[in-house]
Picture 1 (cartoon, rainbow, N blue to C red):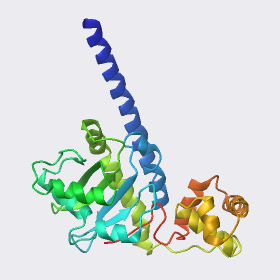
Picture 2: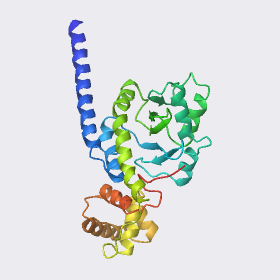
Picture 3: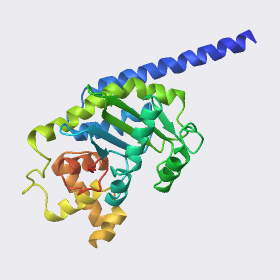
Picture 4: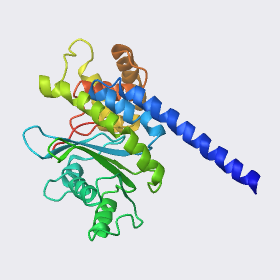
Length: 275
């Protein structure tokens, strides 16, 4: 029995040590975030090692009002209609999660199909609304500003399982770095205007721009071929030329490049929606 207890203690210590190393790795990676594509690569890369998720919504308070501006930074495309619905200031679930977080004491908030928010009267309604838009197993946390109102709020969706104590602890530890990285990622746009398409005349052909835009929307080669009336082989050839011209190595880097060039038109992974 004593040996079994020792084994359990060693296993717990190993898990804690691994988690500590993963947190440190994420802190170091977050420090390198400068622009929006950097942030997207971090949260869809190294960050997944501590908090695996599919959907991510980042909220930041507008300097001229108390309203949070929400942005979709998930790993898959979401329609503009769906995001407009969930981020509606008049009762969208993004705002309802903020309210629930405040009512629960402003600690990391977990919402799953199980009774996480049973103390709140609207818990069942909130869970049902999240299920309807296929956003389940949610983990959320925010940062308070000097005025006592939320300065930033982050909502992770579709975690592999029900968020537990470990996931809450990880989000608590990484929240300051999420906030700082998101501030840096959006500061350039605030200072220099909204991101616009950079000059690419003479670099990509019109057809290659179309292909790159669809890559940024998360389309497969088959879907791109069907959309543009091309063969899959032709699409593959276009992609090879795009990768070579833009000096990228694969679809993920190409998708990030499409975002940098403002070619995703609201549907690519990591694109922005406002409420």
